[in-house]
View (tube, rainbow, N blue to C red):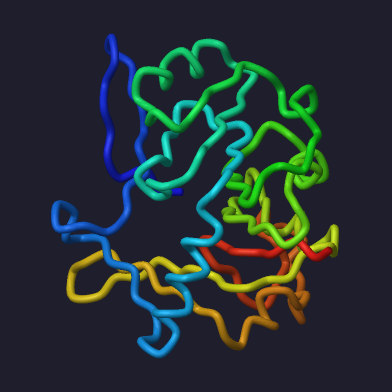
Length: 207
């Protein structure tokens, strides 16, 4: 996800991903009013145990303030860097995700440019759990989930400009084209070959 706030520790950058707030007036998340109440309840239910494999020096505590977040990365440098920044409910582990506990104990998986295969990441997620991921050219996480075929696409988030502000829009209807193959594939493109591409995706793992 686009880092929009940063701290420095001993000259190194720690990226903290922040939600919309009064301090960040340029960022807003817009969703239909009629769905807002139900979406809020769903989000609260998900915010229990979250796994962030391949976290690097990204910190997502502000997005999930009530959750127990486990950061896993093989880089000892990055893990040491974020340990003094993460909240009291979070923990940071220096391991490749392949060597991390395989118990399906997590309600939510956050995946942005992870070092691990998506199959390995999904092994740690409970049935019914959610995946919040990107779909970058270099690490098309959403594309990998679509191809695996064990998860349902629930919503996409698109980044747009509106009145000179950066706006994130949540779409939860008419999602079929985000999974359907492009009618005219471009073999020279490094982007996933789908009819529509979003910036971020929310999936739910089927039982």
